[in-house]
Length: 188
Figure 1 (cartoon, rainbow, N blue to C red):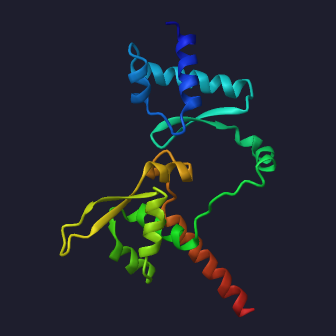
Figure 2 (figure 1 turned 30 degrees about the horizontal axis):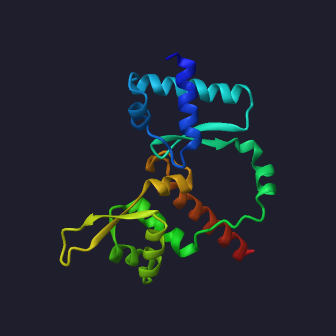
Figure 3 (figure 1 turned 90 degrees about the vertical axis):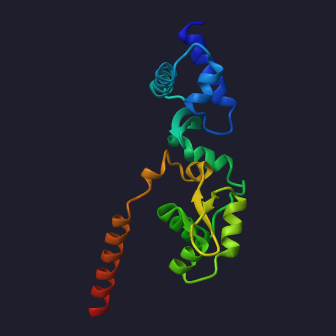
C-alpha cells in the first residue's frame, strides 16, 4: 500500500472516530506500519491541511490524534451553532476538578478540606460526566476512594496531558497582583 493510500486510511479513521485515536490503535489497523511511520504520515497530513488552509486540522490531544475544525473558523461555527446548548460546568465543579487534577490521587475528605464544603453531589456529577474516575483506595482507615482525572477530562479542556495544566505558581502570582491592586484602590 502506498503512503498516500495509508494517509487516506488514517484520515478516514480520524474522521469517523468520536475520540482521539492513539498511535497503537492505528498500528493495529495498519498491520505493516510502525508507530513512528504512522506519526510521520499524520504529520504530513497535518502539514497538508495547514498549507492548504483547510477548515479541518489534526491535533494531538489526550494521548491520541483527532480531527477538529480550524480555530480561525470559530466565529462562523459559533454563529451556526448559537442555539446549540453547551453544558457548562458549575463553579463548584470546576473548583473540585482543579483540586483533583493538581492533587491526584486525592480523597473526598481531602477535597472537602480544601473547599470547606461537602462535595458529595459535585463528585457524583463529575463522575457521571466521566471527567474523573475512582483511581483506587487509600491505605488509611476506612480505605477511602481516591479520585483522578480521565482522558475525557483532557479532551474537555483541550490538553495533551496533565503536564499542560497551568503551573500553580502562576495562580499565586495572579492572586498577589490582585491583592496589591485592591490595596492600592483602598488606600486612594
